[in-house]
Length: 157
Image (cartoon, rainbow, N blue to C red; front, side):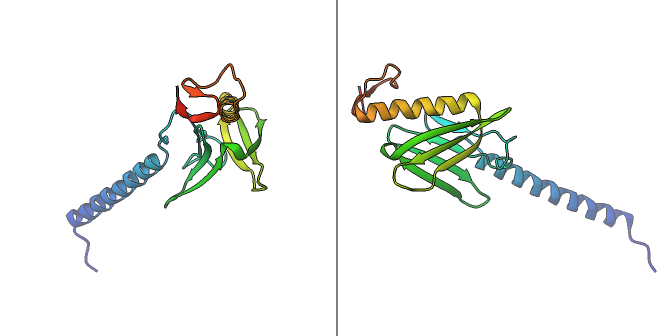
């Protein structure tokens, strides 16, 4: 039996190590890209430390007309949207560190459930939704988002 050349074995190990490092770098960049914050002023990202959000944390984007839940996946994303007029109730279930938010609809659709948001973010999400709904229905609101007219949330003042 012939001994392997130490130089060729060393080179093969270096090539394998470089390939593994390149693959690890690609995976890390992919996870970081999928976890980046969605554009918009009212976007809330779940903590990576909470259940179901370790690699790809869920995000909730709230606009004057809708609430959208984004759940990134390895390939593509899961997106669920509810029009502001169809939001019936908001429930916040607080735990030791994080809170779960349940948004129920008036149309009989399954509720949107978001796990792992900070408690302050959960309260802020509820406040923003209530303000946008007040603006949508023309109810006076002292804390209406700046520049939003009553009755027409899509028209800026």
